[in-house]
Length: 297
Image 1 (cartoon, one colour):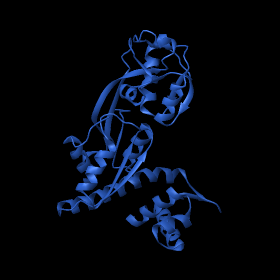
Image 2 (tube, helix red, strand yellow):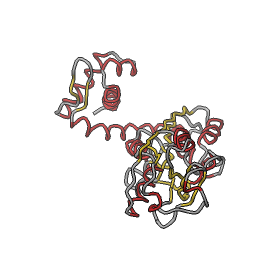
Image 3 (tube, helix red, strand yellow):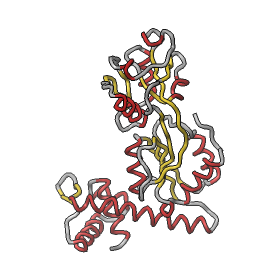
């Protein structure tokens, strides 16, 4: 099995199309098709279901994809490690982050990284924490700043960034805003909630807190960005339970503490592959983070 076969396989799996994958790889379509057929012959099973419009992975193809991505990520890390020993950091830094993550100022950190390592191409994508964890474990991202969703595994490790309590945000005219007292999940049982998609860290933290308290809640207004959430609360269309630092993003809203539950701590972390698979670029970024060359929100 050759590395180029795996590279071709991953490209076709990502694009779900032979022509587009061939164009991206800058190889002929016939050459790409031959490469995939050679891989299928070696593995003695079809990897794709081919139609006139697109190709999709077979069950065997899905099983191979994760392993192929991890192998290619390790090979890339090996090349970059050799370059780093020679004194120049090159290659690509692929970073994922959830919106408004606490404990790191992502833009400032990346600006410092680019200044110190101008030969490294930076790629950034934003997504929910569960998806980011999967991307790091699969080798598609070098690291991610996200909600800590799980304990460390043989494919994923975490470095703590910060932990903070959750806070209720509501309109100043809302009934809860009167005396500014901390509230319990029971106090919020009948409220209309604004919240993020279930993949987001704050949503997962809030869901866990209410489940631990035995209180059922319904999210009527679901959004995928912080400013939309704050706008909806600002129009008194619902309340939101969010990490404490969100309160500084809209000073017109009333912030209330949450009590009587042990599940209201929002923990953020840098998610990385195992030490042996961590790229030199990711290690360099973490070194800057540990040196305090950024300011968290």
